[in-house]
Length: 98
Image (cartoon, rainbow, N blue to C red):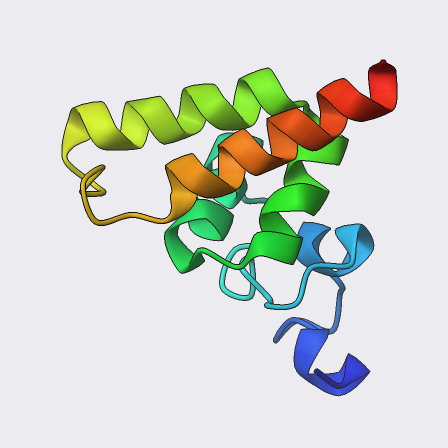
């Protein structure tokens, strides 16, 4: 994605850009709450972006946002790839922390 596409309509660069995410999740709201940004990342199911938000906000917080999405019916746990992705990320964190 080009730098120009990551620039918000008001000319500023949002959280998605500063985190290096592949999609401008906050293009319409540069003041997006962190949990809304995390939910947006989870809803697109882009593994690299999920890894980035887990590193930045913490695995537990990202997992909590996902569980809230499931509880609210915003995502079907049965068809989502997110649980597998989160397990793989957690396994990687555990290996790194030893």
